[in-house]
Amino acid sequence: MESKHMSAFALYQNLKPDQPPPAKKPPMQAEVKKKKKKDNAAFKLKVKVQAKAERKKMRKKLHKPSQKEENQKEVPHNQVTVECVSAEPLETLLADLAKVNNSRERASKLFQWLITPIPDKMFFREIWEKKPIFVQRKNPDYYKGLFSTAELDRIFREEDVQYGVNLDVTSYTNGKRETHNPPGRVLPYTAWDFYESGCSLRMLNPQAFSSTVWNVLSILQEQFGSMAGANIYLTPPGTQGFAPHYDDIEAFVVQLEGKKHWRVYSPRSDDEVLPVLSSPNFDQADIGKPILDVVVEAGDLIYFPRGFIHQGNCLPDAHSLHITISSYQKNSWGDLLQKLVPAALEVAMEEDVEFRRGLPLDYLTYMGVQNSDKEDPRRAKFFSRIDNLMKRLTNYAPLDAAVDQKAKDFIHDCLPPTLTPDELVTSVKGAPTRWEGGQVKDVGVHITTQTQIRILRAQCARLCNDGDAVHLYYTTDNSRVYHKEQLKSFEIKPEYTDTVEFLIHSYPGFVTVGSLPCESAQDRIALAELLFEKGIIHTAEPL
Image (cartoon, rainbow, N blue to C red; front, side, top):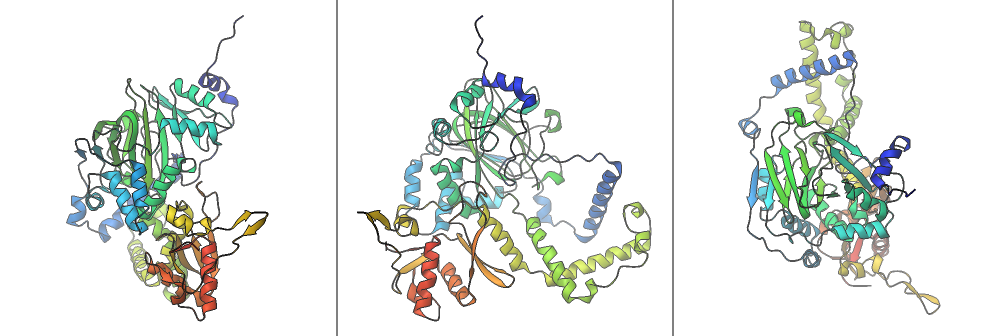
């Protein structure tokens, strides 16, 4: 009897009940959906609802929205259409950017290329975190060279790509979203069989496999002052890979090949504006009418802020390949306050007796959820007391220390810098030390007081006070895989802290080792050699 070929997708469907659960994604991987836990306990639900109502009541008393805030509540979407925007090839653009002396300026120029023709200042003033925008360029080659389906195929063949870690196989049919990841390594035989069966392929960290994507993201992270991540989405014609949802990141959808029909919807309530977490999947009946309904073709761009529900489906006549560049996950005022307030409270309790005074003897009889409906004057007095303490708390807030904690998170999240040709030959990675003729040659660096040095990137290092010691945190030894390495740092001797600050603040200028504010020439050279070995500085000329 002739055996019948069974596709990878069909095989997966038959074996699915026995497969292990998909591997967990990194906690901050951009666009990985986090499902909110449902709590069916009636009492807990009552606590949440009543606490929320209490907070809203207090907010009305303490804060009346300004006219400016009122005007910002509803901002209409926009669309920019330009006829055949011409652009130099991405390879040429990146080569030109490598000649730019300042990494901040480099990031600004690359971001401007991403959103052209919208001026970057206008974008951040009128669009960022406020509304989606569609840029239609009518130039399918605008983003050519960033990534391609051929590159994805190369990665499948040459790299160690794992299902559930680096690649998701997904589908969305008849209102049901499914993930079809088998265990193990991705091979072209099975991956393309899934695609032919109508499944979408999502690569979660293309920067680990594509040097171009790595280069682009490592530059853009200095524009945002926040991790820049990316996912690649390949969708077969006439299919949809994901249910409607919103994300907890600012999303730049860059169409690379084919076309896709996109619909974007406003946040359903104030609670979903700029959300802390991504949403679960929504039913079509939950989301209302789209405010943006467009077909995005190669060379086009859609931006939408976190909290805007979106879905994209392929038209019957073309596949779609796009990369979503993302940033600003967990980078809000609230995220900063989560680090600041506990530290402020610790200081306040040490230094201010008002925070150490005992609670009223009978406060349990009139405060708490079970007493929240009582009309008791003691409740108003209690709220007033808390309000006064919260105002006093600001006097003890170690703001710079809290910002440094956020900076350490950023340093850990960052991709390592992609070195330009000039940086390579003037940094430790291009040092001439080698094995030649049966022996080691050019061992050690040859730094003198006349050597000119500077920090490799504007944001590649951060000096932080960690209690009794000062550490220098840096990105140059980070991995292209998110948090594969531990946060990198080393202790800076107290006598060297001014020197490191001097170097950081001198960027983008070069300074001579002899000009470093150290006590002796020996100290200056020793510190420069240490920073050079860590890849944190490079020299004006090859050593």
